[in-house]
Length: 374
Image (cartoon, rainbow, N blue to C red; front, side, top):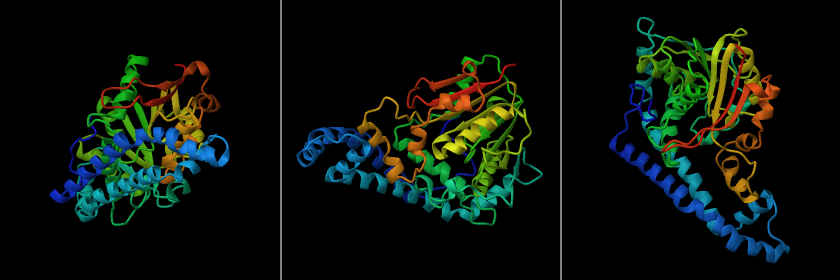
């Protein structure tokens, strides 16, 4: 299941729009591969000596490093360009999406019509998305995760998928990279013969991970939850466009309404770095509550941790928290998922926490896995 798969819910970019999108990828790659690695040298050879002259010592913690680096024109230039590149990326995909807003909504209605749909969508008119999602436009996504413009709007989901693709390519990830495929390989290796009958994808966003589970386990009933109605409408239509049945629900991952022992497999993909400590712990507790005997939960995310890092590395990794509207980025980097899994009720002998082997054109994705005795 490749990242760049084609389907009827993707907006059709004009030649100019496609050119701007390609430029945004090249711009990000130049900043991430060309300039960012040199910032450590700037810190050591320019910033630290200047700070020592004024303060009598080298910067000793992230706060001092941040103050010192922000006084340096090279770093300020890189940071400003990185922020501009992220904003430009969203503008590049927004042009196509808002131009085609009505067509996408109409296509979603066509794909999810009762007489042809395979899955389902359940929205809660009384549901209020959590403030952690609505207070800021996370990673600067236009309108935010919970954007809903009415009239069957699907723009939030289209924005997430299209912008997410450009972001990944800008980070150097390959077009064939699939987070769900990495987790499925992990399942096959660690739990050979495991064939879940009911699967739940928590924080499913545009549903790009939900669909591969329906494809990989065709006999399973696949459910997916998220907090944004526009995101979920798109995810449902996308799944239908790809010919699979997924049942989407508007729910908080820390407080679902599914009965106890409802699922054999509970997963999430890149959700932990977007939620607070309390929500992450709630999601893990819900995972355990929802698992049947012999069930497995696997929560995958970026390999981001402050443990074992220098203060400069922590400062560098923290750029997204301070400049890219990622309020929980450093919260996640400071988390101890071994401790969290135990707090959620998984015995140490029933957990596995660590990085998966990096495949070509990918990252060594991080997973926190827990399982119930059969």
